[in-house]
Amino acid sequence: MSNALLKPSAAKRLCTVVLLNAIGIPFADACRMPPLTQVVTPEQQIAIAADVSVAKVIRATPSSIPASGGRPSVEYEFAVQERISGAADTRFTLVGASGETRPGPASSDHGDDAFWERGGGRLYNDSDCVLRPNFTLGETYLVFRGSPPTWRSFEHIASIGGRPNPDDRWLAYVKAKLGAAQK
Image 1 (cartoon, rainbow, N blue to C red):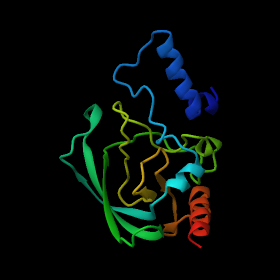
Image 2 (cartoon, one colour):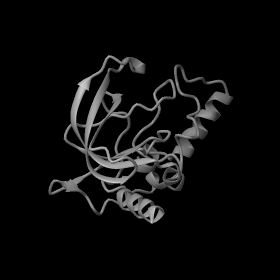
Image 3 (cartoon, one colour):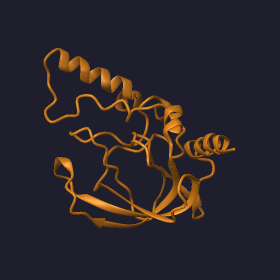
Image 4 (tube, one colour):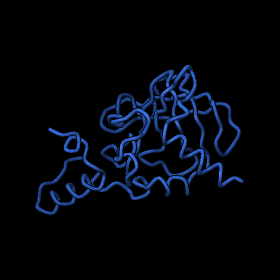
C-alpha cells in the first residue's frame, strides 16, 4: 500500500467525512468538521502569527485540567531558544495532551508535500474539535502562541548539535516571512 493511501491530504479526509455522513454512516463522538481556523494554509498561518518562538520542552507535569477521550492532560514548560516575533518571554507553559496526537511528517525537515497543503501539520482535533498538542520532553518545537491554534502551530523541529535544524523548511519559511514582515 502506498504512503499516499496511508496519509491522505486534509482535503481528502474532510471529503471522506462529509461523504460518509451524507450516506448515513455517522462518526460517533467525532469532530465532524474541524473549524476552518484550524486547517489553514502556510500563508494564512503567517498572516495570523502574533507570538512565534523556537522553544525546548524543559518540563512536563500531569495537569488537573481534563482532556477529551479519557487522555490525561499535561502542562508543558518551554524555554525559548529563539524569538521570531512577539513578546520577549524566556519561558512559557502550554496545556496539552499526553501521548501522540498525530503521526509525524514523512520527512523530518517538513519537506513532504502534505505538510504544505491546507490543513497540513502534525496535529488534529480531539472528538470535541479542540486541538490538544503533545510534546516530548527535551525536544524543540516551532510554537505559534497568541493566535487561534492550527494543525501546524506546534511543529517539531529536529536538533542538530543541540541547536534547531537551520535547514528545516518550515522554520526557514517562518523566519523569512515574519522577518520580512517586521522590517
